[in-house]
Length: 118
Image (cartoon, rainbow, N blue to C red):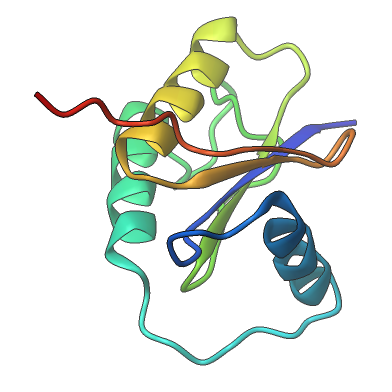
């Protein structure tokens, strides 16, 4: 069994309910034909640079590889025994790129941290 997360690039002001609705549409196979969001592309490149998903090797945190990537999200299915650092990196990168994080285990949605401007 895997530990499943996804990161979502939704418009500013999106709510956790908006993320859950997007997840539901994805699960039903309803994907929009849109250009990939640059935030999703940057997240995917960063996370797969640190933890390659192609080719899937024995020393990978991914339970499913390659990762499912769409124009507005990336799905991450992790081995339950993956190192905590992988989760920390996912959370950090989601915040860095302004993506909302969906935890499929309990339906929790974590918005990106507020950026402090000086």
